[in-house]
Length: 571
Image (cartoon, rainbow, N blue to C red; front, side):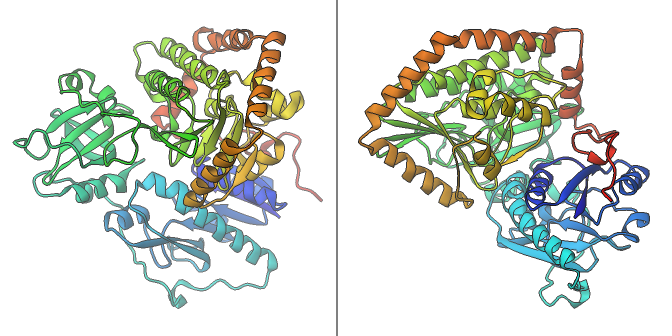
């Protein structure tokens, strides 16, 4: 079928649905929901059999839903209605939640139900739940709804007739509903409120006496200093996070957005005031599992070292790259045979930190510093000759993060993960991280050109099929970790490990003799220098709009197939 995805943005769910539907043989085109007239034009051009709306912030016009079946993905259980479904569920501490695929009608979220799915609601950030449980449940339900539509013998159930409807109409959650009372709210309540607003819109609050929005909270269980501090008082800083007293303990604030500004790591959002707080470095930083804020951790088991790095939204600033490189260099000296780079829960890495770059006094200079720090990290990984290295992608990965992962000997991706191994969407950015060395040797010269030219996301399955990754493993997060640990331990204990390491060193020496890594880096950075300092401002413009979350004014042509000049509806 021809299926039009009508969406507010090309977010993780939309990317997953596009890939999964294409995999099943459907012809997919995408249109951003900019205005009624634009959506109407897209429908007229593409003439879809079905319209699916994975992510909308306003109603589909009657001129479309009255003439076409339009399936809406609502992040709430059957009967739930309103624009803040997930926010209310998290803040209320619901034990389980779900998604509903319903047909668009005049009344918002009240159309007949085509499919649904439920899941346990873990205590986590809204953005994390959306990227994991919501995306997985929505993908399953949408695929079921599409099959039912194609069969032409399924009648969706009117909402009033749904026996398992337990949701209700709830309004847009306002900042008054999210308000933190630092004198009365305990740590769990504050954490829940910030989790329910994470990603967008954040919780309106104050830091250092200034209005701001706060995001990315973590509980603190081990720090017992400042017993006389008042609830709400800032106690300490660690790297990019700030420690704040609660009524019964403390928690870390990882990110903040000042009035009129952009979201930044908290200590960078308030640099001068943060510097006046006492530092609280994490003793034995490599020990993971403690209830505190920790963005880099390390553990060992059975001859395998696991390096974790939990960077918010997968963005890696210059300082974070430098710290991770130091941690990797330290781990390489440990008595292990295999090193596994685990990344974070939601993202493995998305490359350079565009928000930190945007906030810099010279974004061009900070871009240059950041890409060089990424390159230093990638080279540290490429030149690891004493261990087999593995990138274990439990979360999504994009741009330079894809090639940082590919710098490892093996790349294993969890089923459900989306990879975006290209740069050009960010203002025609050329990219570095030694991709011109790493990519062609995996997929060939033509395969590399195709990946960079098409700028399309890859599912974990498709990435393994193309050779970009080495395996697609279990989709359940816990099962993935167990599978990674088992496979890594088998490699560490294999009798041919010494032979394998010798072959690895030999190949690296041959590659270096043929063309040094320094030459690849110099060639890539020549292009990047033009992106950062040249006459074409496309990268700086694209970064500005990305960071500021500017509303889209058009749909990129590589997504909107129906707008290709030569495209026409098949006879």
